Image (cartoon, rainbow, N blue to C red):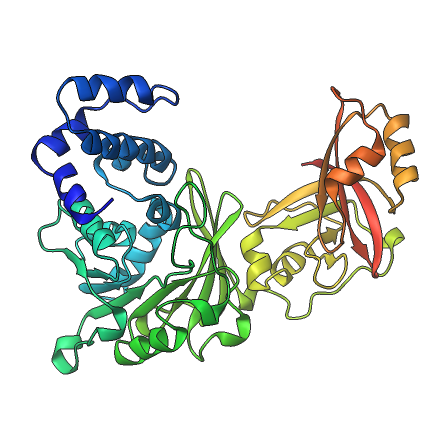
Amino acid sequence: MDLALLRRLTTGEGWGLLQSLPPYEPGSELRLQQRLRDAGFEPDLVAAALHQSQLRARAVAKFGPFAQGMVFTADGLEQATRLEVAAQHAQRFRAAGVHTVHDLGCGIGADAMAMAGIDLRVRAIDADEVTAAIAAVNLRHWPDCSASQGLVEEFTPPAGEGARHVGAWLDPARRTPGVADITGRTRRLFRLDAISPSWETVQAVARALPATGAKLSPAFPHAALPPGAEAQWVSYDGEVLECAVWWGPLVRTAGRTAAVLGTGRGPTVVAEEQAEEHPPTVASLGDLGPWLYEPDRALLRAGLVGAVTAATGGRELDAGVGYVSAGRSEDLPFARRYAVVEAMPFNVKALRGWLRDRGIDRLTIKKRGVSLDADALRKQLRLPPKGRTEATVVITRVRSQQVVLAVQGA
């Protein structure tokens, strides 16, 4: 969608058309498209409105009812911060006494909206002209906030008295330029040296405006964390969404932290000080306790498995695998607990016999720290195609040896 079409869609007749569309239903596009054309709407405007209707339906998962008043691009929606996480970002700035935030690389404006929603003044820019215009549409309810086209590299931070109560938020692009597939999505990048603006530019902004935060990939390397800054890995319903790096007054706990969020519950934050620096490991398969803990992925990314061993008195099955064995049962908001039913060295024939003897014909396979194709294993186990008796097995390592644990959720 070019800038001219966006303006037609978001004003006058185009906006009225978009807001009048019925809830999106897959398969109904052609009929609705023809009906709207017959009503006299231009074909390109109809196509743009129907595409927005489809994106809005997809966006409900991130933005809830707010999605129905927003405008999107496919890439912009995929990269946008979900509402609950954006609210956490905004609260950092407000708690630090920041009044104005320069959102540098604002995308469709998800974080800018969350900041504006708690009365922060936002000055947003994006390198792409159409994306910046979309952000401006999404910020239309806050007249004191703005979004325009601009390059982070050309941003001049305020200095002296003008920098008081001013912060910056950066969301560097982590995609290759150009279209990669038929949906219009571009390929995601994970290396810190591939982001745009560069990591050096992000750090330069943080030096100029100490109240700076940046949304980076969950693959952010621990060794790259600047002294005194905080890197927080954030998960939502078990999926790690980002690593946010914070500087200056926005730092709550220097070093590595993990924030575990989920549907209907606020964040649980785990910091390095809560974790054993070098978690103990299990001595042998026969030394396993009756409980197995699976840390949230945010803790795994942050290198904070030691928080689970510390909280349970347990031991990691093997260095780096993440699973923790313990002798006591604890309810932890940052780890899932299983009861261990059986533990044995990993052997396909032995596992097949164990499942058959117990009449198990549906299997959930979890694995970590081993090179194993779960689909290939499932075929080797020769389970009936439509089973009713279910089990969960964890295939991992103990003392560098592959093992299989049959577990039940607790």
